[in-house]
Image (cartoon, rainbow, N blue to C red):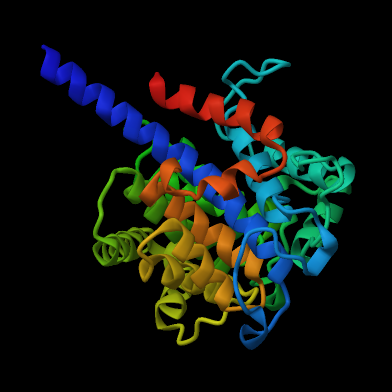
Length: 331
């Protein structure tokens, strides 16, 4: 059946483009945002490739956002040709070990030196992991820990949760548990869950962004309502997220989510998404990384400007991990 074969090939090609776009979209957004971090919106100015600024890094260098995203992706794919062999599946203890490898030896960075810009909650979590605290108890959960450090790295949970083996309840559970490795507060868990539901829905190719958001919020709410007493705190956090009034590109999980979503939802291209994300100022690398992951899915790898892609450092770190992700979806 030539038509069926052609349709299958087209679907596989689109999926590969969206997956590659997601990974590189996140990393490029992160690298684009690094020079502008900590600036006020009025001080951002023109957003361009290769700008000098915060952290003094060469152009094309991703930060902790990209490194910890790659660490999580690598962990979730370890059953695919890993050395040494790994049992596979979802292992938060392994996720914690790989995050710690970044913090201690610069793993998943372009040059082994990219350990700049670690957040307070993530730093506390790394200390807990060093002391032997179980992975899912390592992330702080106090009121001041409601930051975006788990949201910035959570994208791989969506990219690796292949249907039908991982259904919505399992996807949400994975988002919660992965968040808790560095950020245990329920607000962070809910922001991560919403993001991965959105990302997986976008991977299916729905072009209507408002509809995707509305559907994801509705499905997440229904899941928490059906969870009984265990979902009460998550439901309250979702209420707070939906009611959040500001978009300032700051480091809180909720503000970070909405700033990234607004940058993406109002853009007509990947490049415009990143420019809009950075224009918020403040935590520019993280806002652009979170938005860039969604935009990379939406417009695919070809939607990322060639100059930006070719200027990225560390492609030798990314390629083997990305190839395993693509292999997972070819199964």
